[in-house]
Amino acid sequence: MISIAKPLIGEEEKKAVLEVLDSGMIAQGPRVKAFEEAFAAMCGVKHAIATTSGTTALHVALLANGIGEGDEIITSSFTFIASANSALYTGAKPVFVDIDPTTFNINPGLIEAAVTPRTRAIMPVHLFGLSCDIDPILAVAHKYHLLVIEDACQSHGARYKGRRVGSFGTGTFSLYPTKNITSAEGGMITTDNDTVAEKCRVIRQHGMRRRYYHDELGFNFRMTDVHAAIGLAQLSKLERFNAVRRENAAFLSANLKGVVVPYVPAGYEHVYHQFTVRVPGGKRDALRTYLQEHGVGSEVYYPVPVHKQVFYTGELGYKQSLPESEKAAQEVLSLPVHPALSKEDLATIVSTVNTFMAS
Ligand SMILES: Cc1ncc(COP(=O)(O)O)c(C=O)c1O
Image (cartoon, helix red, strand yellow):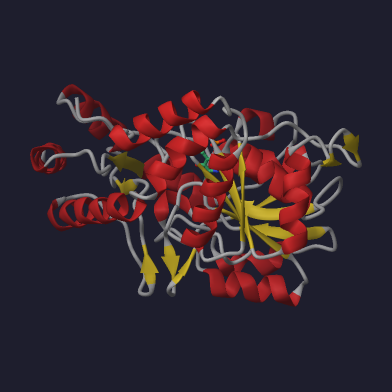
């Protein structure tokens, strides 16, 4: 079976973990600090703050920016549930705007109409490894004095007009094993803002500035040095991993037939966390079954947009319609693109898809 995702763990990661275990300092310590510094450098920002997951990174990033009860956050519904749920954790309300059907990312042209007196932030989600169209988002944010909290959980190293995602506002990343780099579980917050960075560190550690003096409500969202050791070794491979993802994506884009391959606008550097195609003609689910039967893994990210999830329609009473998000949920299929694929794997993916789509 050609898997849809595969973490590439090498000798470097194993050695680094054993060093930490042997050191006797296994909770948050020097490796976390080193990982944070290296991650901040990768993004081109002053600070990075490690947490236990992408979800906790989002949660802390929102709290550290003062988001809370009654605030509204404009974001995309065509995403993993954690983007919107992180707003709920703080007492804020996610307000969904439809996507641009060519990129699957939030349509910046629709954001302004969603701004209300309660809007505090825009949360662009850089989905599948492609940056959102940031300039018009920053323009609306500037006009209405809104914060920008980037959900870059799927886009480590992606660039927009030469700048890395996670450097446009407060950035958040996931280090889950399927991501472009992993720390097993883990998250990272990135920011140039000294106050936000300090606040993130305090919230991550039970609201503690001085040992056992708790000035505010916080959590235990600390990353361990064991996880940071894996993450640091992975980070040193990010450029290589992303280059291979791009090569694999170029091959797939050049050879797949009958499906709509990912679109990359000029000035964007895609890092292909996912290689997500549109399958026209209502054939998506049948293609997926066919691929499964012929040893090719695939996945639907995402079959239900957040505003249509039962918790959102039921408990929270969301009733809106977002046609492009709903259409994408019916048509998308992600194919393997990860760096562990062989040339034969790529040829098999192409021939299996093309055979089915020609039938
Ligand atoms: C867009 C997006 N946001 C947030 C998250 C949450 O990250 P984690 O699973 O590390 O909590 C993910 C993870 O899949 C994601 O894809």
